Length: 465
Image (cartoon, rainbow, N blue to C red; front, side, top):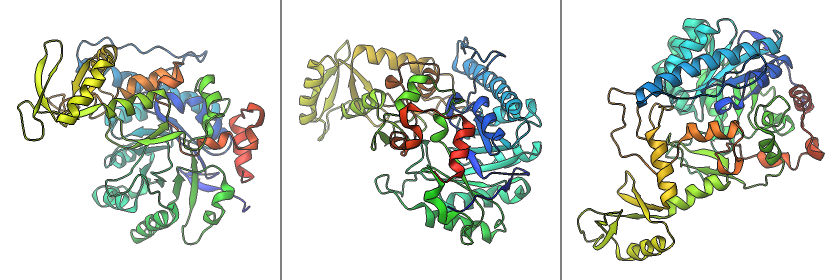
């Protein structure tokens, strides 16, 4: 195993071992500070970060606004306060070692205002910002204004080339690195495009090599690429280390830091990680963002799979394809469906799935009255956590709407991610995970349900295992 040499990241020489920034409160100041203290780059999540008092107790977030716009303003205020709080916690725990980064999603609601607010309120505490889930053109301007390095997350050379041409070439001095995230293996939202087959994973080496060649063409040969998604142990990436062809490479770990003592996820979640098997993670497209994402295939995702399967096309007036009448709703309002679909509908109605909700694609889904009530409630209480949400039809524009019908095949992502981090039934909530999560059960390091500290994990990674 080649030795891993330190690398200059965000202005300081550190271990090229990076903690991936994960979702709502899943990468916290506690885990991030410990990772930096171990000599690497810690990354806390700036996506609606939670606020913890001096005793480590999380404050409950309650939305009191009567309108979506009012709740959106509350969300932004909470996010800024929480991000500053987590940055301070991380800085204190790091003891001045390593580097501290913050991760944000460009498509999260109020991203630019939140990024401004956190960087202003935590000046000197955050050394870099990673940003993906969309095309974050303006992150370069914002970070440069604060003297903070920025790290776009991309899944192709093509995406980086577009970002460079439109924005980054004007702000090259604070481009700290480029995160290549394998869209087939990474947990959470990923960058699979419409021209890529979700069922046909591609080898990351030629894709990263193409990214490096693109970077060399514009004078960025010295800027590190962070390999993210599917990285479990360095032994498997030895040919990447000190590769003249690939140039400087750092390695980002998203899944393994979940199972550390400093990780803020609840104990039932940690115990579940030790039992998962290969194939237990589903790459799906139910997210209200419209992006592909990967999560544990639990009861939460299975319900979404089944909900979408109970779907038929309909028309308001009879057509050649939809010619058979079907009464729906309490008033038996008439729509028209295909003859075969009328039989399916009868079966679902007989099973008690008596509520029908319309989708933006002129289809109906059949669900129970309780599930319909829950969906409608979640859509109504939306707080605008995304810049545009397919589930609730919220958009942060002048009208406050996408202009499309809300999609009941999706879900409120803010609700479920807050629920799971605060201890709800992990089988009934969205549990993001990378596709290598099954390796916890196979890796002897975790025998007898061993949960390491962050420093123990970093020391283990340096051995190549």
